[in-house]
Amino acid sequence: MESTTDGKSLVLGCASTGAKFTPANHRLTGDALLDEICSGGTIKTSPSALLAEAEALHGMGCRYYHYHARNRRTHEQTTSNEVYQKISQELQRRCPQLLISFGASRNGAEVRESIARFGEWERVSQCGLPLHLGGAHFVTIQSAVELQLMCELERQFGEWVTDAADSPRFTEAILAYQPSDRLTASRLDTYSTTKGADYGRTSPAIQFEVYRSAIEARSRLGLFHEVEWVQFPRSQAMSRYAVEHPLLGLGGSGQLNVTILFGFSPRLPFPRTYAEFKRVVAAAKSLEYDLAEPHVQKRHVTITVGAAVLPQQAAAHFTPLDVGPRTGRRMCALRRLANYACRPDSEVDILRFGMEDSPYTVDSQGRLRPAGNTELAEAVVAEMTANGVRVETDHQVVSERLGLNWISQSVLREQRRRPLGQPVDRPLQPA
Image (cartoon, rainbow, N blue to C red; front, side, top):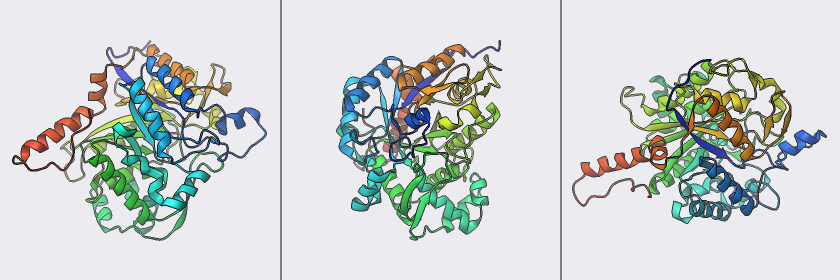
């Protein structure tokens, strides 16, 4: 048996509800099992049930909780900040060491209706909620539709710009590109439910302004930047663009969390090998450096990984593991991801599971069945234990690991550079 690294730990993260598996996003197929999973029939929507589950997960060691608000009556996605606030305030009271993340990659009929009434900011409006008023430490502000910017950039400059996002040539494209105001339907080439990839009509110019406003809101509140990668290398290019663009400044506070959703799309398939997994993680970590100064760390980038594999594709990913002490065992995508995250050189900080990514489990024979968040947590913890990796629960260590202390130090350095009495551009992080 291959030896493991003593002392390695991972932060356990739950993506509790998600945006994809809803009744309206799924067209019934007649397969009772798949219809139950894909319509979100097992996803909790009532606040009492969600909070009870969150407390149970916290007791299992979960310290990162990612949440998409849903209408408890229709089970569809909602932009109601009252729903977000109620969950956040109770989570902060019951589980004070839990770091909260809100999802902003929202679509669906009720979301489109809200956007038609109140504008595109409605999609990400929870970015502007202070933590003490029911906001979140993190919000995934790089929603899938914002990759529309990269699609237009590709049309203008060629696909080389996303293939070479870490090249100095990309800086030239960033400065030359002007997002257009041409309204187009936004659908992504993703593995999704029937309508899960439909984001309505918008324009690159609108998305640029929404993205800029979201980054400004997070910085103004002293809260943390987070993006999701769903199309590699487009997602990498979008993050690089936002980091380098003078009007955006993603990660300018000194911290950025990148959530990589393996299996979400043909451009970001679930890795067949650990080497493929490492290639994507390394690209995300490279955002710690600017293109102009590749050897000077400018921000702390943390890595979250999730296995966003549809139940229809679960069998194709039930394959032998290629690394670690459990090499050769056939296992599902989620368990394989856990083993990859456990490798000594994985560079992963948060191991994510949950109903957003894969609301099902696969047994040792490859048989599929619905599962809840606590059962999925048990599965990943079992793989961590088999690899000799601990669930990290020490609040100080978690804070250090996820870059919260990095922001404190960055702001303090900025304060000391200024004469007494002059304000700092960024507020101190909340306690």
